[in-house]
Structure formats: C-alpha cells, structure tokens
Image 1 (cartoon, rainbow, N blue to C red):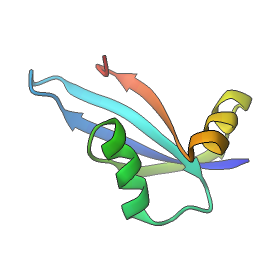
Image 2: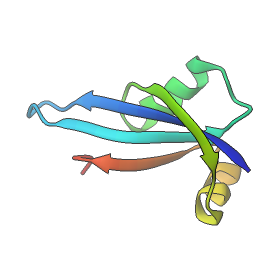
Image 3: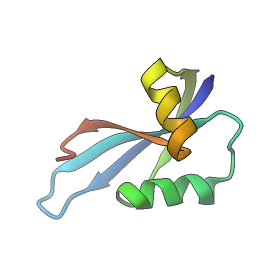
Length: 75
C-alpha cells in the first residue's frame, strides 16, 4: 500500500511546536477529508511525501481510514 504523508505542525498552548504526520492511502487527495483526520487528532496539516506503509500502519489505515504518526511534543 502506498500512503500519502501529510507533515503537520501545530503550536501548542505552552508555545511548543507539535509535529506529527497524518498517513492516508495515496489515492485520497481530498484535503478537507485529510484535515478532518488531523482535526480528530488535533487541527492542521501540510502535505509532505509518499512512501510505502509498514504492516502496522497499513492495518490501522484499513481499519480507521488514517494513521497519526507522532513526531515531536505530541503528548
């Protein structure tokens, strides 16, 4: 499965910059739908690149339609 990686940065209330990726099937190009996935986790994103998904990520995308890859200051 090829996935699209939407590189996401959001400023937290404490001033720290949160960084996470929203991973969706590469065929999904509707930014509103992808933004909604980000909103479910938080609220914003920017497209980054496309890569092959791991088995775990692929299973989550098939089950939920998306996967959030936490990068920095998320929890």
